[in-house]
Amino acid sequence: MTVSHLKIIEKFGPELLKNVEATQTLVLGDGALSRKVKLLMAMALDATHGTVEGVKSLTLQATKAGDTKEKIDIDTSW
Image 1: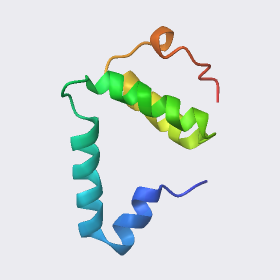
Image 2 (image 1 turned 180 degrees about the vertical axis):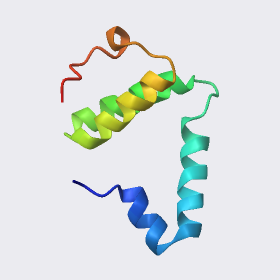
Image 3 (image 1 turned 90 degrees about the vertical axis):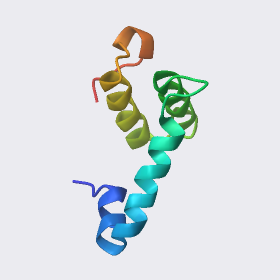
């Protein structure tokens, strides 16, 4: 079982975790581009770099934001 990087940040720097979460909300929040579009873009970047855990996390976030498996167009049988 892998430990979430956010759990590690929380353990050693609770204030840093608050800043990381605030930044994530700001960056991935609706704006000129929708949250869904930003999540798909982040997912593409993680996929390009082979960051499997990042793609998984972003896939879950995109699904919760209302994107469909067809729109995401990936195999989620991990």
